[in-house]
Amino acid sequence: MREDVNEKCAVVGIFGHEEASKLAYFSLHALQHRGQEAAGISSSDGKKLRTIKKRGLVMRVFDEAKLKTLSGSSAIGHTRYSTAGEDSILDAQPVFARYDLGEMAIVHNGNLTNAEEVRNNLIKKGAIFQTFMDTENLIHLIAKSEEEKLTPRIIDAVKKIEGAFSLVFLSRTKMFAMRDRFGFRPLSLGRLPNGGYIVASETCAFDLVSAEFVRDIEPGELLIFKEGREPKSIKIFEPTPKHCIFEYVYFARPDSLVYGQSVYQIRKNMGKELAKIRPVEADLVVPVPDGGVPSAIGYAQESGIPYEMGIMRNHYIGRTFIEPTQEMRDLKVKMKLSPMTDIIKGKKVIVVDDSIVRGTTSRRIIRMLKEAGASEVHMRVSSPPTTDPCYYGVDTPNKDKLIAANMTQDEICKYIEADSLAYLDEKSLLRSVNTKKDNYCTACFTGKYIV
Ligand code: AMP
Image 1: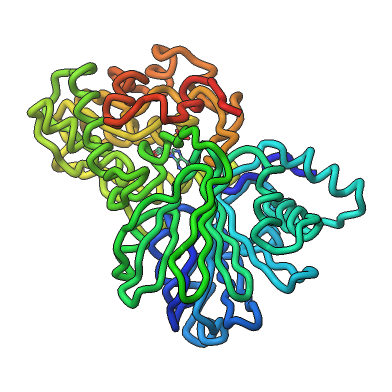
Image 2: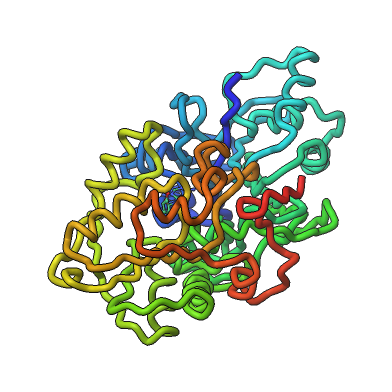
């Protein structure tokens, strides 16, 4: 079995709206940055669930005619992040199944840490799996549960899984939203203008469909939506918040509220902190677009050094991280970013990015800026060195590919050919985040895993 199956994705659920699948479609469109490999929607008209899922971007997977077939007043959707190796359509979500209580569909963001153990137990008892996804375990656990009704079956099932999960379930008449006890991955609740509800990985989806942010689903909370009543909340686990800090560093869209705070403001704070602790004399602060923009603005504001768009991004190319081979990644960086020679030439440049993972992007950008005539290039990174892989749903490569796990900072500086290199430290990162520092998972920077 493949070992690298992770779900780094977006989920959405719409409940109580005539055009639920259309709203799910628009929401997925706003969440496209969380996954570009595949997209899918399941809807329910109260009697039957219908599902469409396919490889590709949300806009490519759906059109007006397809959305019309996804009738009903509730719908859940998913965009899937690329995983190295496999590209089976079976690994797209929602995962749909028929079982003794009828039909259900599930979407999942996160990564289960005991998935293999649970799966092997299920296989021993005769279960047959069609995909490599953790999420399929849940279907089996729900179907096999000895509880009679769906809600207790879901509770039974989620008590058997461990790790990171923000989940949305759809049955013929109900929708369920659930977050693991640590609240690793985000999941927010909003109210639609007609009184219906939306849940989504990020609030930027709410803005597109004119929904009002109500609150986050709490860590360990199950929220049940049923027609004609307010959502019912059940506390399944004692909340122990350990939110993924990388959502703030890179993953979430800056116009979202994540864990109740503006991603944009937090990224700006990170840039300000970086300028305070890692100053350097220079003529310009230049962001690596788009990830480095808010922190570069913060750096420029704090240091008083002018901010310039010294690098242009071609928006018609996907994220560079996505291609599995090194050769493809190198090529995509070149296609994606180009220097503004007039601005850069003869200047001492501070270039700000949100993170260095393998080092490919920084190395290429610094070379490009030097070729464009920059007299000095100082690399500033608005997060600590990424030293450890994520087991909770962010696509970081294995330790042997993480440059900061294998080289000292001086060696990295030489490798990326920068005149200087500095990272934000963990303490300053947590200061940027404003809230209780114990509420965050920083394992990708520290190797201190929670489960
Ligand atoms: P690398 O070239 O491997 O050092 O990747 C660093 C670049 O990838 C930075 O510009 C980041 O904005 C971006 N990045 C960091 N983490 C991820 C991720 N999980 N998925 C996609 N891109 C990422």
